[in-house]
Amino acid sequence: MDIQTLKLRYDIIGNDPKLMLALNKAIQVAPTDLSILITGESGVGKDVFSRIIHENSSRKHVRQGHGLISVNCGAIPEGTIESELFGHVKGAFTGADKNRKGYFEEADGGTLFLDEIGELPLAMQVKLLRVLENGEIIPVGSSNAQKINVRVVAATNIDIVEAVRNGRFREDLYYRLNQISIYLPPLRERKDDIPLLFRKFSSDVAEKYHMPPIVLTDDAKRLLMDYPWYGNIRELKNITEQIAVVETERTITLPILQNYLSYVPTEKLPAVVSDNSPASNQITDRELLLKALSMGQMINEMRGEINELRQMVSQMAQGVQLPQGATQQVAPSYLPSTPIHHDEEEDFMTPEVIEDDAIALEDRERIAILKALERNHGNRKLTASELHISERTLYRKLKEYNID
Image (cartoon, rainbow, N blue to C red):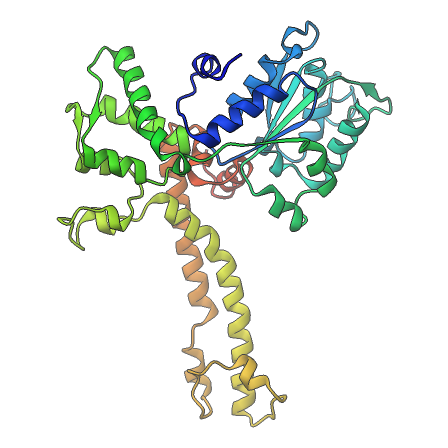
């Protein structure tokens, strides 16, 4: 199948060289049985490439099994993931009232797409490696190995090489999965494709709802191309559909477009926007969430540093001789050289103040998650993608904040 036919069949828009390279590689390796690792940010279309690979292989004609099975490793609770992948036998654990096939057995003879493979717990990585090496699975509660014939296509949106360096992903499993690697570029690396995708999505909406298509002014088009698109194609499609349905004007100007973009680079804001305008002061939910997620670690580090400072100041006040070099290593230059009385010391950022800040940050994080869920109509996968966290992390946050 030539590339143009392939693009038409799978509704792929764009001519970027990196995208074309990925398509060519997918077609070349599809007929083989090699394991494939697809890398790229969330929303770039890794699931589409898994279909391309499967449907252009001999496994698409398999009669046993169910062809292509897709599994999101980040969405399965850690306690049940082994049973989900490999199945279980009756009586294996409480509630196991009958034998159950896992995803590997369901996909026998076909292709198993393991999305978000980087979220797989280390203990499961060992078991997955054994399955890939031996072609056998052992259901939970059983001692009998079952032969399976499954081709694995894995995908991740994390820096998997960095995860290997940090010990979060097994090196041997990485090399076993990465027999062939396919990189899908983010939209900000495919700027010329962005207007084409916008036109396609707006035309689809116009055709579906019998309305004229929307068009962009030149300055709006430039902003569209310069926008970072952290949610990539999924985010662009979402925003295009919103604009096409909500706006009565069919010509979309720069101010209209800015109303729908959650992040606008400062240098792209029009000169008429003042420092006090809502557009310049607005902090996005994504920024709030990221700040909240990072502040917890910062607060813990601050507590340790403050305790060291308290201990040091107390020793200074009591005339205790500090170890040689301690002053240069611990005491910052802004500390007074004279002893500090106990009541003055208490005014120096107390743990209670830090706890209050942490509570405020948790409230902001909870609000950010709630708003993202509302924007995505409760769809947790889209919400996790928008917030740039895994679904497993989102589920943990929902439970932590008691969000239904």
